[in-house]
Length: 383
Figure (tube, rainbow, N blue to C red):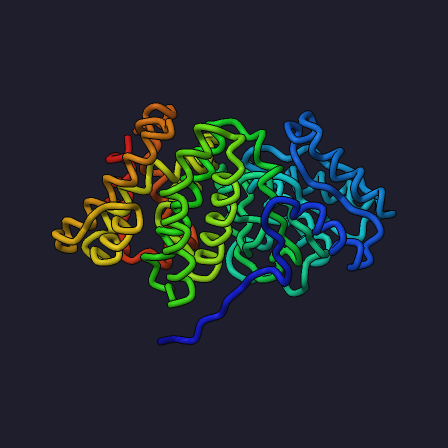
C-alpha cells in the first residue's frame, strides 16, 4: 500500500454541551478578538449573539461578519477579510454549515498568505498556516468544520473552486446537536445526503485506506439509521447527535481519501445555477455509482449491506444495484427532489458543466475515469 497521510483538527469536541466545553478551550488558547463568520439566518435566530455573549463573558471580543452566501463567493471572502483587518482580529471563528466554514477558511488563508483566494485553487497552494480558525458547526452534513477542503465560487467564471490545502484545517471543531435543532427539514435532508455522499465517495475512492474505510462504513450505517428521524423531528436530539457523529466520520473519510465525480459534478451545478450542494449530491450520487459499478461493485455491495439491505444472496453486480436503489429510496423518503429538471437545470448547459467537472480535483480519485461524453451521460441520466 502507498504511504497515506491523515488530516484532522488537533481538537474536536462533539455531543450535547460541546459549545460550552469549547469556549474553555478557546480561552486557553489565549485569543483576544474573534471575527465570527456566519450567515444572516443564524444572526436572526440569535445563535451568533449566543456565541458572542459566551466569548465576551470570558473576556474575548468579537465582531460578526454575516455576509456569507449559501454558496460563498470570492467577494464574500474579500469582504470578510477587510472586516478582519479593520477590526484587528487575531483569530477567526466560523459558525454555521459548510458555507460559513468555507468562507472563513478563505479569509483565514488569505489573511496570512496574501493575494486573492483564487491564487489557492488546487492542492496545497499556500505557503503558510492560515490565521487560527475555530469552527462551530450547526448542520450535520458538510464536515467542513474539520476538513482541509474549501469550496469558493468564482463569480467571474461561474465555477466552484476546490481548494484542498492542509493549511485550511481548523485548529478546533465543535459539533453540538443543540445548535442543530432549529434547522428546517429540507436543510437537514440535504446536508444528511451530503454526508452520505462523502462517506460513499471516500469508500470507493482510489485513495481509500483501512482508516478511511472504518470511518466511511460507520458513517453510512449511522446515516441510514438516523437521517429519516432527524428530518421527521428536528427536536429528536438522539437522531441529531448521531447524525453529527456520522457527518464527522464522513468528513474523516473524505478528508483523507478524497471524493469523486459526484462532487466534481455537483460543484459545477452549484457554481452555475447557485443550487444547494447537498441536493445536487443526492441527485447525482446514484447515477455516478451506476457508472462506477463495473470498477467497484464489491464495495457498493458492502454499501448496500451497511444501509440495511440483505445482500447474502446477491452477487457483486446485483449488490451494487441494491446500493443504488437504497440511496434513491432514502433520498425519496426525506423529500429530495426527483431529478435535476426539477431544479431547472438546462440540457443545453450540460456540455459546459461536463467540461468543468473534468477539471475539478475531486474527480482524480473516482474509481473509474470518464470521458467528456460519459460525464455528459451521467448528467443526462440525472435529468
